[in-house]
Length: 387
Image (cartoon, rainbow, N blue to C red):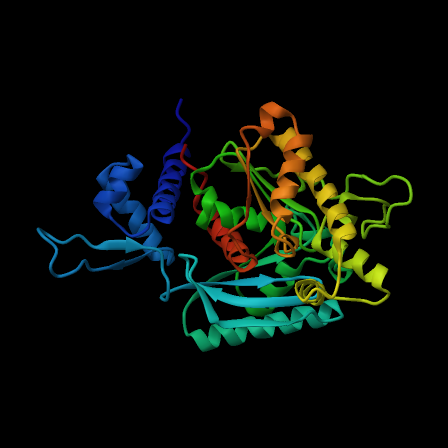
């Protein structure tokens, strides 16, 4: 006997499918949506009505000079609704507004030094979100928060933020939601970048790809079979804390010694260069000194590239992706850095997997990652994917 819940579930799946078609194709008429989705006209009409009521779509008239009976155009809201992206990081945090089409309102971007305590961090961010919503005078549908740490997807609590320990054990989405009365979602930074690539970037048409963020930590987000790899607690794909220097390795923020994260990131490179020159430097200072010919970092850079290639090769062997997108600032330090790392990674990985895998620099950014996190959450609330 057919389940009495099936019709309702199917309606939700159809609503989500219509949203995904417009996300991937852009501005469309109802007839266009019908053709792209394969869903009947009455079903498309009901799904569109539901999305308009939820504020996830907006409708506008076609140009007056169009031939025949004009059909109204459907698009993701740019200025009639917004989401807020919050980026938590070890040095600076940011708050930015965006339309649901991924158009960032960068004139409203607020970047500030990371507060020293968790309570101050939550109060500062909550206040900035409320100020932004008030200034924009646009309905805010939710807040996406990213953090460079291990996030328990079951309760939104951070297991470990190895470079931002004030977040350990905390649930910032819950705390910010209680102060702003907005729906909030917490997403691991590397996962958010993968969602950004899938929603707005080169990964839209891909089913199997990886996004690596090796700026402060060694974060990895994985799409396999068109679905984000999650795992029991949302920690699937975590390779940052694989031991690669068992003897004499640097102590990692996780408490272990010699983790991949301690040797294969921009922050690790900064640490080892600072250690050699005898003073604390920031990455931008190192970059400027290298470009001015005042500092040679070849030993540290080559070592970092070697370990990064090991991590990339491991990802290729384990997940067999079609593409790997990498976010790293070290590639800007010398013209040959990216190509050299790619060659080393391909040489270490299994040939059948590496020969069919394209390694690219990521075109996404951390702001779109936070925005994609909340938009994906809102889409999930509509219902599961219609496959």
